Image 1 (tube, protein in one colour):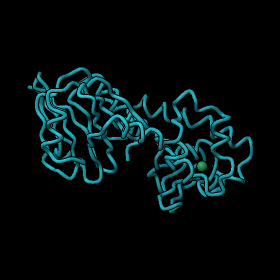
Image 2 (tube, protein in one colour):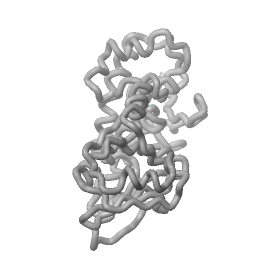
Image 3 (tube, protein in one colour):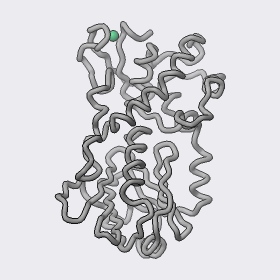
Image 4 (cartoon, protein in one colour):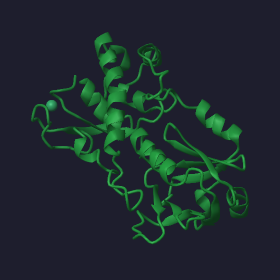
Length: 272
Ligand SMILES: [Zn+2]
């Protein structure tokens, strides 16, 4: 599921490609991928402009000049693709919703099986934001704030990092990488972490997410014909999806097991 680096990559690309543009056509071929009847969706989206592109956790918000907003969540399979008139089109999946612009470019929302593009009121967007924990790239994500999040938590550290109510935007891939970088096993109970481990953990979270953004995240399918960056983070993962392969630090095989309902990848030598 796309996490902060993948959604930041989308955000940056949307700001480059569709920000300020007027939507002149709206097509929905999978009604279940949105939250309102198609005619209502079209009425509020068509002939409006995209005024802002924001990211809250794993959500992208397209603020429209109509006063409403579009909220995209990609879940597991969802992908966006920006089709440019006259350029080859290689959609990353089945196009379920399309926003068409005056310059004949098209923004596709593909493979929205669990993902969606919802039409929301500003108050509903606020409610999403309020339900999320701190964003680790936000200035408010201080060591003190992080320690406060950890305090009083009794469960395992990996599910805590992925709980969107604690910290927003971290999912399975980066949680595994963060714990490897901090030298902490995913099953460690939060109260057993030493002060040094907590500080190390705090330090590596923004670093890894920033690295993910700089490398273009792990979504392999390009956003547009000109996108040469997306997926660039994949070769830099040290434990995620590397079961049985040698640890890049010590050479021992990377382990995998279910922790808190999700696949954990870790090195028994480098993590404690
Ligand atoms: Zn190792």
